[in-house]
Length: 273
Image: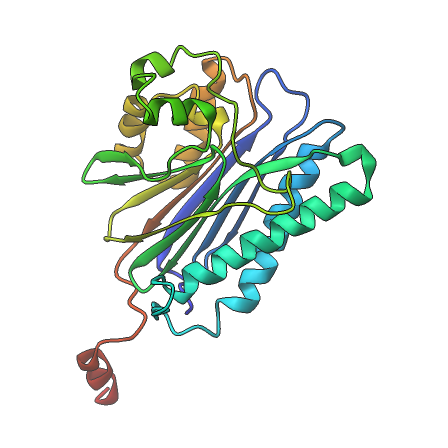
């Protein structure tokens, strides 16, 4: 399914004001409707290697597996669309590539990366994520965090040990419980969402969402026109608040409908032109 011209998108990435190198990696294939963001971790530039491997592996594999699919077709056994299954398999493949690279190169032992992937098709969105990089959706000026962080802090919130307000002051907010490449296998969260024209989607690393709160994000995104300018403004906001980590984000907004199959009356009208 070719989505060329059906999306507006923009991105920004920055080292921040504290780190000496940028361990985040991004990739976009607007024709396929694929948006990927990874936030690496590990010493001796291992984070950079892990995030770059994740993004390259995922994009290469999705370029092979997505085009042959009939958009939105459901796998009756698993209950997910075939796009979601293809994304999950691509993430598992990327995990294997990173883990094997770390085994072969001792200087990269223990490297890993968080990951969030968004794939648009048939007026839908499939999301795969591992770690604490996030996807938000702004719809009718209401901001919603779609993904749930894989962190020790989020587990404590889910179990009632912390409120959301108390969590903002916690010293343990960045302890991730899942990352790509650290182990030989990985659990991948998959979600499927309906997409409406005018929705604005934000993929971001924790360098943004740790410093820019949801209320400020909602305010910025509600006023967002040029997505590249908006992305850079959010990076500047995070840097103004300390820039303690690398800051990366992608913004994507569908311009209109993108059904997998053209409606019969659209086809009929084209026959008479």
